[in-house]
Length: 81
Image (cartoon, rainbow, N blue to C red; front, side, top):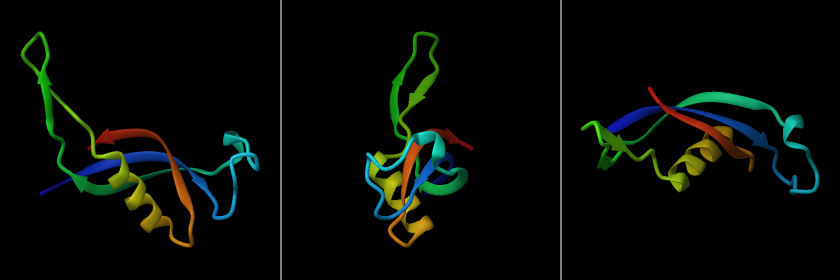
């Protein structure tokens, strides 16, 4: 089963290295992705369950596939919808 996640990220164009840009210069996007269900991490002191988010490699792969052409995503925020 999959969960919808809202991921905010900056687009790093293909062939751009770490010395070639300032983060504020990159396009920022927010898109929705169907990724793994969150796993239970623990129960907090008030009895509420705490969950992990989707695995980082899975998020990177989903963004890379969505953008295509060798572009990468620099992940900023992840939110379960």
